[in-house]
Image (tube, rainbow, N blue to C red; front, side, top):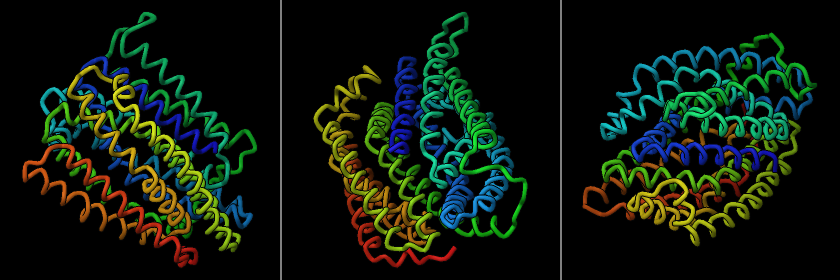
Length: 425
């Protein structure tokens, strides 16, 4: 439950960002929305060390080997800092080119690149925050992350108000103020995690010992997870570029709808994180039936949460969207999106929880094959064909829903077979 609540706070923070940025302009809203798609690509690199680290740390904790888990955390922290340096340079100098490549309008390129350049300068704290949150979750501590997130979300909202609009003596920085507020909030997270781990008898510690063998094991699991995330992110970018071709209002509508939908799937992400940790710890303790059941239980709770919010999305789409924009066409597109995705929340919950359980077991090659096949065969190619034939944006949203349903069924079938619990890492 703390993990689910933490992810719910995550999406509320994003929604507040979108709400305040939406006041600036539709182009600013679309620019920030596209930047979140770019972050999905950056998440691919984070997956390289986060997923493998999660799988090993949870197993070490399940085996009662805190010292080994803590030394791995130290090594992965150094690796994440080094990796973020190169990502930050690429993001800062290539931000405009990325937006142009996505086919964004000139105003979206201008607003979005301002935002993403600042995010790139502070990308190191985002890398560290992601690693430490996932490591503590793998060790079984999700409450601390919830408390830290609650504080940083409040800080971020306050700084948005101050820096975007210019209050308490500060200038109005607009979209750049939103980026600055985000980086300061992530910096707070990183410092809080460091204090928690080093000063407060945490379930993990930083032990300055580099075990190359453990790093290789983490990367062995992580590379297929990163390739999985990479192919998924590229397919999403292609999918978003198809939506972008319909126009700025359609793109903004999709981005707003996606953010509102996050209210439903962020709790699902929370239970997915819980499933990953519990499955990994159970396998580490060689309790394979328990590992399987942990995923089943997490999945059932996620169905209830996401299914319930899905009903709200179907019944009140215009009301939810109206908080973020007053543009009539954007509201119409986002509302239709929410009605359709509201119908797909249960299969989406299946996909979230069962795929995370498989990753917690180290079975990342299985998730790679499923996602690569499903996204490109059932989503990207049909969407491109529908656009080429002149179908409207609603057809694209319907195709997306069908792909989600198919993928959910595939994950359910693979999970029921139970062979994944014996994966070696």
